Image (tube, rainbow, N blue to C red; front, top):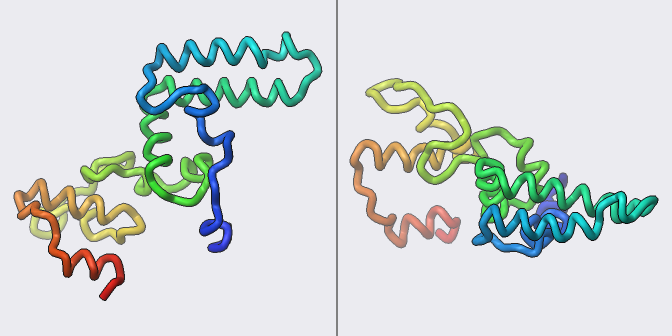
Amino acid sequence: MSVEDAINYKPSEEEDYYALLSCDESSTVEQITAEYKLLALQYHPDKNEGDKEAERKFQQLKHAKEVLCDPEQRSKYDKWRHSGIAISYKQWLGLKDSVHQDGSGEGAGSPGHAGRGGQSTNAHRRASEGGANIYYGARRDLGWDSEAPSEVVNKFRNYEI
């Protein structure tokens, strides 16, 4: 994927599993399953024999239901939706585990071992490898000041100064 592709990336309708199933993020597994059953009946291959488009739609619905009804997969999907990363969900799943980490510093990756001075060696990883999340999680664990960074620090981080 080129930089231009990433800048101009727009998720397809097929990647919005909630919309496919006429649900939203607050929908329960029971609601998602009920919506799936209604739509699955409409697009089921047995009712639409020979209709490749209906078969494709049925497979999309089935996949969306499987992801949204599994708590772990749904959590990953929701992280992708809110990540702001301009790649497809399938590509995002293929990335290193460190990209999927949450703000607590504990994600899908394995925790680091204590290195120099008892500090986790993962705290020295680059931000692109999830090191920023680990660093901030380590700050909390060590009891360091957890107040919000100053305006100057925020401007620096956002390349405004």
